[in-house]
Amino acid sequence: MKLRHLFLSAAVAFAALPTPAFAWGKTGHRVVAKIADSQLSGLARAHIRELIGVESLDEASTWPDEMRSDPAPFWQKTSTPWHYVTLNGLIYDHAPSEGDALEAIERFRAVLMDPKASRADKQLALRFIIHLVGDLHQPLHVGKCCDRGGNEVKVRYFGKESNLHAIWDSALVDDQQLSFTEYAERLERHISPQDVIDWWTVRPKDWIAESARIRETVYPDVPPPPPPASSGEATPAPLPDLSYAYVYKFTPVVNQRLSQAGVRLAAYLNALFGHPQPLAKSEGK
Image 1: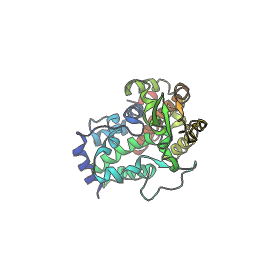
Image 2: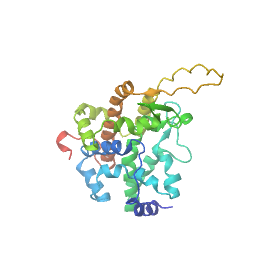
Image 3: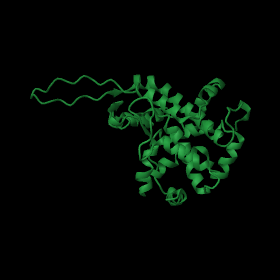
Image 4: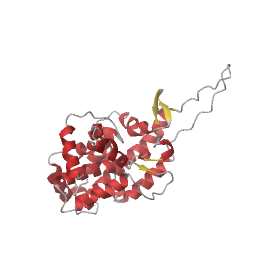
C-alpha cells in the first residue's frame, strides 16, 4: 500500500482520537521537538514549513503515538515495531523482518530524499522521523526481548504498582510538573555550545548504542524473597519500590537524553535538508 493512502486514511481520523502516552509520553516528545526547533537551519525550517505548514515541530512529534489509537491494521500492527529496537546485547546487528525504529528512520529518510515521493508520503515520513529520534533516546525503547523493554519488570513507584518501562516513558518526565515549553527552556539553558558539538551526530546506531548502555543501569535491585508463610505456602515476592533515591539518580539521565535527542533531531533534519553542521547561536530561530 502506498504511504500516501495510509496517510490520508490516518489524517481523517486524527482530530477525533484520544492521546495515549507512549515512548517519552506527550511531554517528553514535545520537549525534544522544542529543543530541536531552536537549532534548525533556515533551509530545514523552510522545507518543514512547506511540508506541514503551520503545524509546529512539537505538534508533529506526538502524531505517530496519537495515531496508534486508530483501529486500522496499519496502526495496530504494521507500524507498532517502528517505535523501538530490540537489542539483547549492546551492538545493533540487523532489523527483524517486521522492521524496527532504525529501519523505519532509514526508510522514511529515503522518502524525504526522493523527488518522486508525494507530498502526503513526505508528510508521513517527516512526522515519523521527528517522533522516532526521540524514541531511540529512551533507554528502554532499545529494550531486551526477554522483558519487552522493561514492560514485564513490575515495580512500585512511590507505592503504586507499575512497570519499569512506564516509569521511563512518562513518570520521570511528568513528575517534573512542568509544561513542555517550561521543561525545554530549562534544559536549553544547560546545553552549552560544546554540548551541541559533542552531540551533533546523525547516526542512529550511535544513539542506539548509548541507550543500550544506559539501559543496563536502570534496572532496580530485586528485594530478597520473604520467608514462607506459616502455612508453608510461598509468599509473593515483594516488588522493587522506586521512590526518591531512584528519581534523584535518574532524573539527570532523563534530562540529558531529552537534550541530546533535541540536538540530534535538529542535526538529522538539518543534514537531511542541506545544512549538516551545527549552527552558530545567532543562526537558530
